[in-house]
Amino acid sequence: MSGRSRAIAVYHEGAAYPRLESWARNGDSFLKKLVRKVANFVRYQRNPRSASYMEELARENFPGISEIVIVEPGGHRPKIEWDGLEELVFLWPDPTGIGWKMVEAECLRKRKDGTRVWVLNGRRRRFEFDSPIARKLRRRRLWETSLVFEVLFSILIFTIAPCLWLFDLLRGKR
Image (cartoon, rainbow, N blue to C red):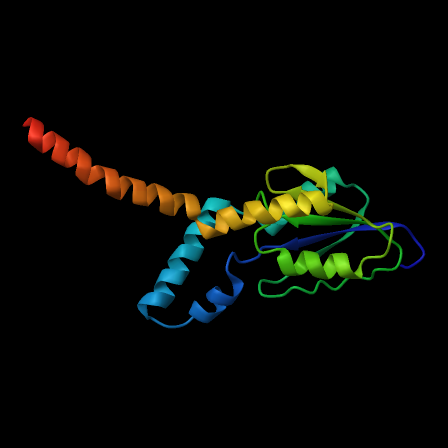
């Protein structure tokens, strides 16, 4: 295959918290159950697309794709023949590629100069993957996996609700 120009797509449904999830996989302790519940919540929010859907989308958007490599959960080393590779397409099943950090690092480290890297996500967005985009996505992934907004909103609700209840009680409304 080497010597010919070609394009390869890589699919991976990564875990939001890979180390924590592998630790919490077995066991019934409160902490392990909590980790599993949070990971399931984040996965539900991501709404990842299936491998078959992403493969169909890839062939539709990149007709020159010669192979689709599927990286199993927990893996981060796609088996790719790098010689003659002109385009590499990351098939993110969610909008921001949560869980792709290791796969991206491995691919970007091993690719040859001149290999263009594209992203096609499960929302049908297609863009070229470069350093500024990678930095922006790192921040977005952090916001999505840290659940900062959810925690702040919960604190706000738990702080305001008793005040509103007390205000209604003092005004005589029940």
